[in-house]
Image (cartoon, rainbow, N blue to C red; front, side):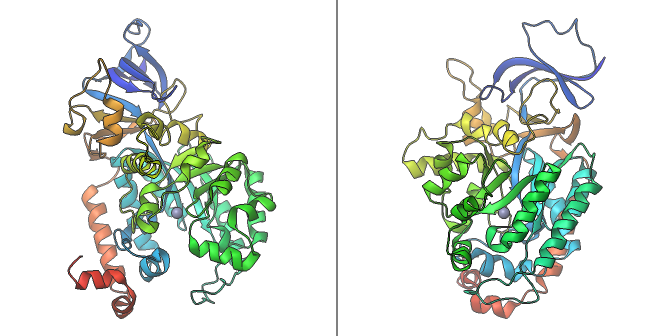
Length: 471
Ligand SMILES: [Zn+2]
C-alpha cells in the first residue's frame, strides 16, 4: 500500500524535453515518486494507495526552480525601477535600514508568493540565511541557499567613483558564519547550500580563493553575481586593470563549481569562455530588463552549454517573484533580441525552470522532473483556467505554449513538496496568509519612517515622477 496515486492526469514529466503524457497516473510513497504509468499499463493490480486524487482537468508537472532570489529585500517591492543607478539611487536609500525583524517578514512573504505561483525550490541569496533556512524548514519548502559574503567595509564608506575599501576580517567572518549555518542544518533533506561571494568587485582575490577552497572541501557550489553591471566593470578595471570574466579565468576561478548569475555586461566572447569552463549560468530576465534595460547573453552561452537556470532576483525592481513571468520574458526578450520568433521555443525555456535548472544546481538526483526515485515536488495546474482554455490535443497540442505564453501562475491550484501539500486549492497551508501580509505591511511602514525623505526629494527620479503624477 503506497501513500497516494494521482489518477489519470495530463502530465509533463520534463524528461526527454517536456515529456508529455495524455492520460497518466503517478504513484507517490514516503515523499517520493514511485511510478508514472500510462493507462495502457495496468497499475491497478500492482499498486493500491491509501489516497487517490483524480487528475481530471489537471496538468501535473514538476515544481519550478527559482535559481536566484533575494527574499529578504522583498519588503522594498516596487521602490526601484524606471531609473538608472538601480543599486545606489534605487535600493540603498531603503535597504540600509533593513533589520532582521523586517527581513523575516520579507522572507516569509516572498517564499509564500513564490510557492503560490509554482516555485518549489527557493534559490535564495541573502545575508540572513539562518532566517531563510528556518522559514524553509517551517514552511516545508525546498531551499538552495547562499549567504552573501562581501568585504565592503561599512565603517569606511566611499563616494561613488572610488574603489571600495575592503575589510578582509569582515569577509572571513561572513564565510565562517555561512559554514557554521550550513553545519547547523546538515542532514535536512529539504535544504541545500551554496557559498555566495557577492561579486568580484565586492571581495578581495584572497578571500575569493579561500571561498573556492572551502567550497571544494565541503562539495558546495559557488553562487556568484558575475559581470553584473557598469559599476562592477568600473571597479574591476580600476582595481585589476581587467574585466571580470577574463580575470576569473586567469586566476583559475572559472569552472564547473561556479554558477554565475546575470552576465549583464559580458561580451559574447566572455560568455563563451565562461560556458566552456563548465560553469552554470542563471539568467534573471525580468529583473535585468527592468533595472538595466538589457537582455543578458543567454543565446551565446547556449551555443556551448545548456547548464541554464532562471531566477526572479529581487522584488524592489522586478517586481515579482513569479517563475511564469521569468519563463515567458526569457523566451520573449530573446526572440526580440534576435528578431526571430523561433528563438527559445516554449518547451525549451520551460526546461530552464525545471530539468535544466536542477542539473545546473546539482540537485537533479532529487528534483527537476517526474521520474521514479525523485522527490514528489509537483504542481497541480487547473486546465479549466480561462488562460489555458481550450485544451487541444489533436492535431496539434497547445498546453505547453499556453503554459509558457499565457499562464500567469494563477492557474497553479495546488503545490506539493516532498509528497506534502504546501498549497491546496489555492490556499497556503503552512502559515496564515493574512498574518504574513499584515506583518510585511507593518514592517515596511516601520522601515519607511527611517528613510531620508529630503534625500529622496533631492536625488530620486522616482520622487520626481511621483510629484509629476506618474506614481
Ligand atoms: Zn542577485
